[in-house]
Image (cartoon, rainbow, N blue to C red; front, side, top):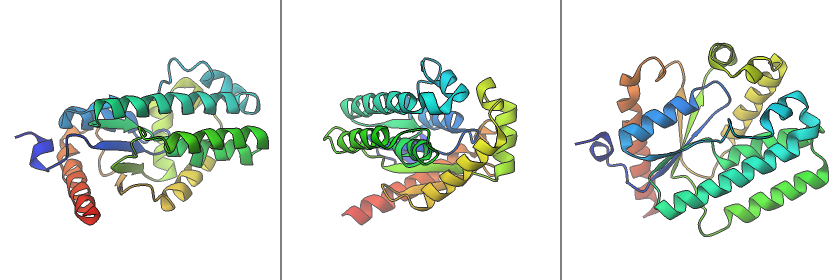
Length: 222
């Protein structure tokens, strides 16, 4: 019996991994998908034509970057729907609008008109019949010091060169966002308790918690 069957996790579930840069979303996504025999859905970072430009000039490129991410996530949502679920997703569309786009607007890096265009597109996308809201959002969290240390250790060059103040603000925005998130059930995991980058043996305990929450949620819906 595999871990998905052992903990009664539906084979059409959609699990999203959320958290700020440096918490290990990609590692968690790969490990969970492998253990559950699910497909993965990743951000297209390496082929993103705006990311390097954005880190060099937030004001000029923030709108372009957010529209690019929104389009890519919508295409992924359609792909997940067409497969009928069974996915682990690296970062959610909710983070784009609730954290990144809002931050750019509030800091003056995105005009009011651009922000309204962005949010209008987002609202239209998540209301389509083939947008599959996650069955569970796994939120990876830790202290700011621990996350910053991970960015310095494992981050991309453009992330390591970004001022600490940017990561501090991102950390605070993520904390506020997750404390008010209500779109689906949440499993919060501290990165110091489960570091799959160094120890994959802790994965089963995470999967057991996933199974418990999904089955409790299913019972509640009935």
